[in-house]
Image (cartoon, rainbow over the protein chains, first blue to last red):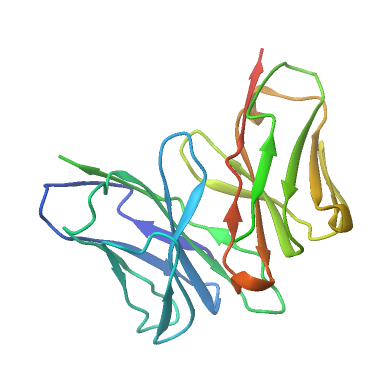
Length: 113
Length: 110
């Protein structure tokens, strides 16, 4: 079944701990993205990657890190430097410049306790 | 960067009614998508529509790129249409990442 898989769906973290959110796609898409959504708001871009081994900061990259070692995987690490990490995190991918339509995973809800 | 404004912010309808959601954007776009966010948070693709008109069942969308707006029409609404509808765009200065509006919260009452 093709698609974008995010795991886990729910994640609890203690303050001061780093945590990594997984995003895997089997759609053979070139580009991948991470967005953050706070209650009642739209999505804001954290990081994006258009090709393996390359990624760029989005609008709210502080306190986050990513890697893109494989085309199908784009994990996001929420570090202890992120001051307000509790949020809903969504991963997306798109095929390439000729076909920019983006598709989203089901999201990970992170709560800091 | 580009500004994306959606209206209305909230909309309450009786089942069976029709509605129109609007998305205005402040610059030329090369991609525009409409999404429905379901109660579990997942974003469902409705339309990829940088220009023109498309229809899919009870839903249709029109983008007038030269006037910088897009409309999403929902006819004969059902309770399952409830949720948040987002418009998102890419533009020449953004590579391929989407910039989202703040959404329209739609509630369809039985």
